[in-house]
Picture 1 (cartoon, rainbow over the protein chains, first blue to last red):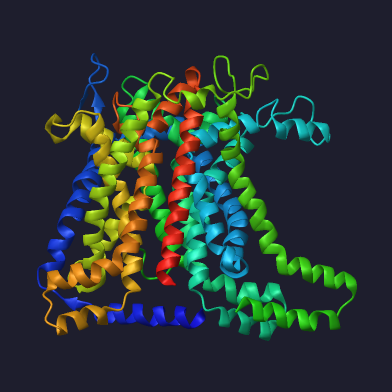
Picture 2 (spheres, rainbow over the protein chains, first blue to last red; picture 1 turned 60 degrees about the vertical axis):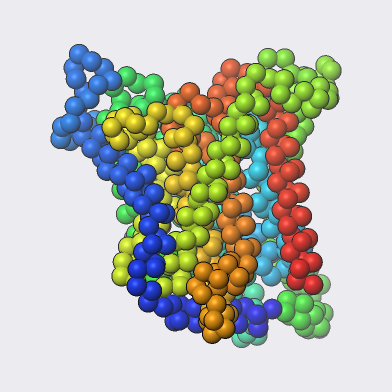
Length: 302
Length: 288
């Protein structure tokens, strides 16, 4: 096993080293895909930015003209700063819980599962195939006032008679944690699987204490996976509005995604505000990601 | 590897420590596995709920269990019985197939360029591929909405094709990452050997690189289909009046969700898992 891992590592090194100069060939290979990304990702993002600075014709709601209306950002912030904070906070909590649940699962898959490894792998991916909206609705039913969780907690007197979980922040964070958990598990598993088990054994021989081995050998070896997993959880969680909509309450648990969605589709003339909120969210996340990757990261992102 | 460690520990463990310590060690050895099994159960609880509620003889909305007349097989006997549910499934499948084919083709070409060639601008290319994965879906949905509504000279009308365009865009990066990983683990000397044997670059690709790359391409395609099939947020921004399956479920949740949605959701789960298991079995046979 480890020999194979070693061999593939050596090969991939060789693969990079023998990458050849190909004149125009690589550019032709890249052209269609990157063109697609430029036209349908970069250009729309620029458009989003221009919309975020547009002004509305006073007498025609829903019609905008080109402007440099920085006031849109001021309005967006003064009204929705709380939603921003809540999004980052909820997404941060979901990432931490996802890590606490996901790491042992990835670890068990990589080192303890033996021949059950593939079965566990399928089990992690399988829930994905039931629509994410359906599973979130199922959580709403599970956590509902008459549902099994609340009844059990009330029966055990852990929860007061009038207590509830749905429509609270707990339900939203639980939903976010659940929905993005596989994105945490798979990259961590991939990096643990690639790690040479002999290193971990050697760590065990040196430190004897399981926890020390884990902290000084296993965890650092899996850092690329942890980095990828936390980002793949945090980013979608911060922009999500489905969990807050289906599991949260009308006011106190709404996230920035809910505001963006309703400004675009329900508030007449909301386009510039929604665009400035979206653009800020994107910029904020990019900055966070850059800082985070610099701090913990590897040279290559993809 | 793990078995030898476990065996060695088992040899040493009884010699040292009190029974209490031994119990502690036993749990310590299995701690990860115990947590893992709990997490797997947790992952499956909502799936089980979805399955159970497909037998619910619901009244207005399939949210609370109606003991009268449940469980019933009637929704399974008539999976298209609710208005719009099968139409939306059809749209999702069509979008998924088109987006997967295009994204897999374009993404594989990018991965080949990135791994096999040295060229100027590689870092910027990598960054461009990374960007969509580092952007929340809602931002991509919002950007595409603004450009489809206000930009491109108004040639795009929100609907089926705007959904397809958006799905190709966000699947592309995931295809590149998946195929790249496979490509990096391939020995480039095999291709060199083929060229030494006077195969042209195109022949080398189809007869050597492509067959070796195929498992990576297949998993990229599966990934991109499941991302596309399950996407809700971007789709809800760019779909106009077109309804995909996740959008159907979300919209009908507000008005009264039919149990047929559970039937279809759970069937997709069974089909997908069977395909994955089948793939694993075939893969294992090939290796043997």
